[in-house]
Amino acid sequence: GSTIGIVGGGQLGRMLAMAAARLGYRIAILEPQADCPAAQVANRQIVAAYDDPAALAELASISAVVTYEFENVPVEAAEALAVRVPVLPPPRALEVSQDRLIEKQFLNGIGIDTAPFLAVDSDAGLASALQAFGGNGVLKTRRMGYDGKGQRVFRNMESGSYAGVFEAMGSTPLILEGLISFAREISVIGARGADGEVVTYTPAENVHRDGILHTSTTPAAISATTVDMARAAAASILDALGYVGVIGVEFFVLDDGSLLVNEIAPRVHNSGHWTEAACVVSQFEQHIRAVAGLALGDTRRHSNCVMENLIGDDVARLPGLVAEPDVMVHLYGKAESRPGRKMGHFTRLTGRISHD
Ligand code: ATP
Ligand code: MG
Ligand code: MG
Image (cartoon, rainbow, N blue to C red; front, top):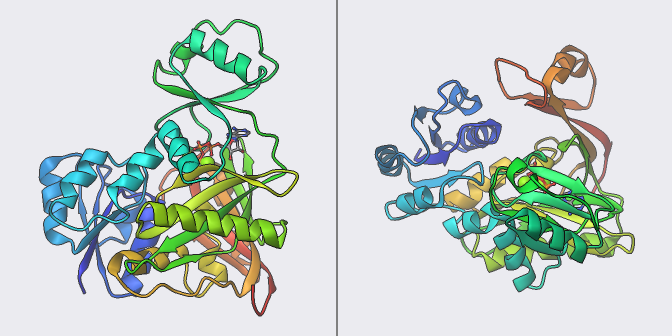
């Protein structure tokens, strides 16, 4: 079979590689860390920095198409690849999702609501932004944050001292978002094919612990109207980006059932891991199908389910979990467990359904 290139060798790359292998593709990864989760299943690894010109040229030369498993792939690297080989999702999706300010401007520009936001580039800027938001807000680095890192919540801080906050956040461009009091959080995994066909999985409801996704429960406890709005929003994001591949869209659900998009991830998403246990075509296979130009698969689930992440020492639960019926366990092959490190996940099926 032909080779699919993946930039990044973490667990998402590993699970993409496993799905690709099942469809007969070979996988080449570009990843500087030799002993990475994807290395154990890829046919070939180029061990180099993501922006190494020779490595990018090599990846392009051996791949029929190149995709990526994390949103912080340098845009210049994606563009350097794109002059030699199709890069999917398109590099524009990276630009939009790498910077929380550009992301929100893009979303609002296509008619999708987000939390209110203001760019912050100094302590004085923070003071005036907090005042504009009535003293409450979530300050985030515009770039490179994940698992709640690079964030600080302010409550009742209409007046107060912000001296040193900009420096403490790394003296990097920041965004202050309004502090949203949401009823729940959900996400939609969507996919767009090369021919423009769009499919979406039913929304999952997400619970975070210490800033890290803890559980994703399908279906979410939301109305059919909210389900439809969430799926429609994901579809319009996919269309607006001329996207090909799988995307994850995170939402806040407000008390009245209306939605704000929190952020988008131009890749397979942790809150979509349940699809490997509860759908015939997982998000991983869906992504491979899309970038390889195959027909997209059915997104309907055969079961309701709860996916739970195994963080750090949680991985010691393996013997007990595999003894349970209706539980699918997936570990990432990471040698060392560390606090806060995603080591694996499991999905518990909670009831068969005939249709969703
Ligand atoms: P991920 O690991 O999903 O990429 P991240 O580091 O990019 O996470 P966000 O998704 O922006 O971070 O925020 C993490 C969590 O913090 C959200 O899922 C939500 O629970 C909470 N949160 C973020 N922004 C806001 C907000 N403006 N108002 C209220 N809560 C928020
Ligand atoms: Mg994020
Ligand atoms: Mg998030």
